Image (cartoon, rainbow, N blue to C red; front, top):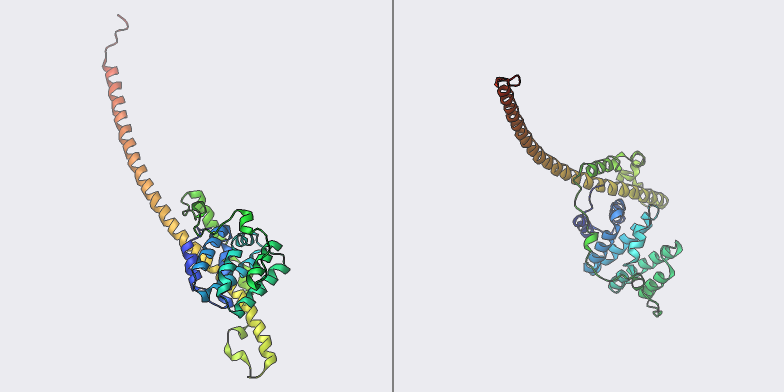
Length: 294
């Protein structure tokens, strides 16, 4: 797997829009890079605090989608968002109108129903959202020893792209087994009906029953396409980074090869001189008179 880029994530956050496809696409991209969940959530938290008031809700939408979609693959995002979600609510809720707070209420209901977070965290979030009397309990961040430091610790910053042959081989294998080789997803996308892609299938105005069925069809297809798009976008990023890694690797091998060729030529000259000296010594020994019989 190619190295995750915080710059790429920051750019994608700046381009995030208030629509289901945009949120789904970025969420699947993040799930693809879940091994960098700690860095990703730290960047998400930092950028949320810097975002314009009108954009803070979309950050929470994204967090909700990532938490919901990643649970079957592992607990990384659930655990990492737990460290910052209380502070994120504190920062975002005052900027939201009634509709925005209603959406956050739905998120809390889902997290509670599915036991995503424990009672302590949920109580804190409800207090922030609904203005209830704050109970005398320690914050999750205090219990875990966390803080509000926006900076990403150096040890969690993404490492440089691997340059050894073994690491390069692993990256190549990861790319080769990526989304473009996922036959199941491609097959599902190939079965998406034309009604989703052609406006002429919308039917007659006023046909409410058809519109309801068509809306469900389009929604499901959009989610599938967003997943495929997100995974392919991550794969394209991987391949671009792999090209750079290969270029660096080849350049390094060229330098090493030039050094080895120079060393080989030097050894060749030394070997030729040694042979000449050996021949001269052999000749002198043959010309020397034999005195052993005296």
